[in-house]
Each structure stands twice: as C-alpha cells, then as structure tokens.
Image 1: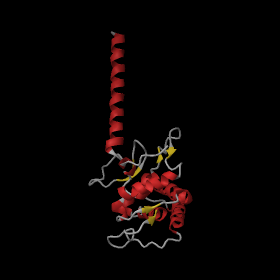
Image 2: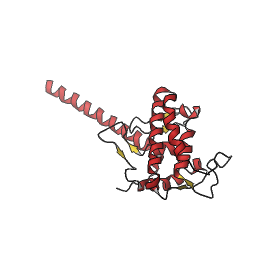
Image 3: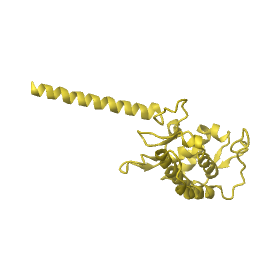
Image 4: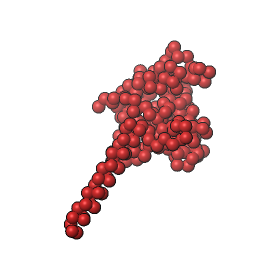
Length: 207
C-alpha cells in the first residue's frame, strides 16, 4: 500500500530520526510494521524529505532513484540509529559498545561519495545538485552524536517514535501534539468515562 508521506511522518526533527521512525510501533510486536517493506517507498520518502527537511539539508534535494539498490544500506543505517539512540534516551548518554555497529553502517553509506558537507550555510554541500539519500542519511545520523542533541532526544509515549525536543524548557512530551497528544488525551478521557460509569453502576446496584 502506498504511504502518504504527510508532515506527521517528519516530526523526528532530523532526517535520521524521521527515517528511524519509518518502523511504526517498534515496541508493540503485534502491531509493528515497516513503511519501507516496499522499497519503492524509500524513493517516495526521500522526495518528501527533500521538502520537509529542507532546512537541515540546506535546500539540497535527496536522490534515491534506485531505492531497491540502496535499501540494504538505508535499512542498516536506520536500524543502527534507532538502536543506538533509543538506548541513549534511557541511559542519558551514548553507549560506546554500540558505536562500532552504528559507525560501520554510516561508513557504508558514505563509501564512494565525493560530496562535501559542513561548510557555513551549506551544511549538506551544493544545493544546486542532488545528494545521494544514503549519504545524507549517514551525515544526519552522525550529527546526532553531539552532546547537546543526545540530551534532547525523547521517545514519544504514544507511538514510541524518536524525536528531538527543541522546546525552550525541554518539556516536549509528544512527537506531534496534534496527533499523539490528542490521541492520548482522548484515551484518558475515555478511561475516565468508563471508570465513572462503573462507579455509577456499582452505586445503583448497591442501592
């Protein structure tokens, strides 16, 4: 089934986290699913991410014209990123024992690339030419290692997505208030109504 790559799919705050979040409900074995199961979605995701992550990419477009060919590298970076930084949220720091796998996956994504990144105003190089998706993904993932970023990583309590909390007082709870926040509010409201109904029925039965 074709995925609708809406703004909600890009609430991680960085390309690498948005990519990690293409596995939905990771912590629920009965309901989890992979939006990249159809590798063609990698190309469609990259096209959407070029717009939604334009600020991070410095306006450079992502190139994923052969999604089937790059899928193994993309998925390797995705899983290594999720594993390392999901663990970092619980620890409050990155575990060095997990770094080798993560760095190896990123290294594979960068292999053979002639892109130049990091210049002022052009973080991902020349915006006039596309950059390979796997290369940009590796660079984005490596940027997560900054201590000021690690300290702001969060896991959404509703959908278990990873995201960067850039709120002023670091108090953001949900990946997306309009979606996950409202769902949790609705769920709490429903539970309160059910509990109140049970109490009311008990009182009537005891009358």
